[in-house]
Length: 355
Ligand SMILES: [Zn+2]
Image (cartoon, rainbow, N blue to C red; front, side, top):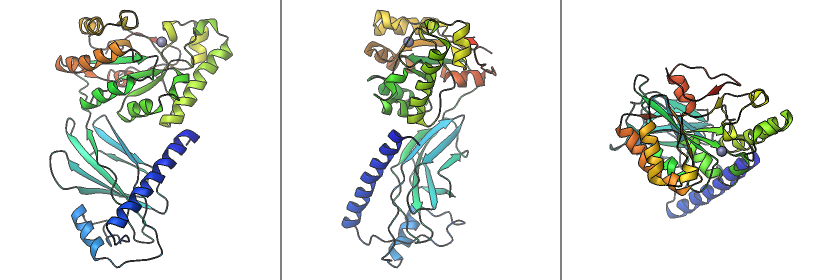
């Protein structure tokens, strides 16, 4: 884990610890005991609470802090992960179907992640996680409820990759929120020196199942740079992205779509251009951008937009439901390749990805 993310999480846990403390003052007894042998019991939260109320108090051990959980749906599964909680050695994962009451404990694990395959595509679920110390028998409160719509991609139906360049920026998060609402994904090709300015936008995009691609460090015209300088542009951006989402981008959008043999080699990733240039940066028009996308949309298309312009954000909020209504599945570039069974190769340039 990098410094920034680490300090973000540390400060979060300080807040979480303070909240737990405040709650404890309001509702003692603070100390609780885990359900014995609950590994085989389908314990509901209500049952756990009853056990907690009846449990004898302990004085020395400290109740674990509430874990910070994130979840994302990809390929009809839900991937949950959370930060390690000091003193806890087991985590309980709870799930309920959105629209119904009552959580079911679906997993006890010593890991900091869980992949839920027992979900139906197109349905929404709500998750909570609890940190448990088996040594002291103490449990944290459950984490904040996380609602996830299970992403349903049918490889036989048409799909399209919306791509947003030059961000992150102040308009990125609204686009992500809209994609999330419809269970859809897009790709954000970020400029490395902007990542630290809007880390939350990058994080929420990734956590919503979107892809983060590399778009150079400072939007340099790559063919004019030396081989070493092109490499540095890519490396510095990868580093900043990894600092926020924990992994490197695997695709690059060359600035200005400009590629030569040196760029192909130095970037060392698939180079993703576009089949539809909306010219949103030029028109700065919501309606012109919508018109460009809707009249050029087809299966396998890669659409170029820029999330640093407000009219583009407004266009995206209208486009996402419009495309969904027309039967398009909005996927990331890597998903488009995967569903269309195309393996993206380093140094190759792609304009669209059709079956
Ligand atoms: Zn650009």
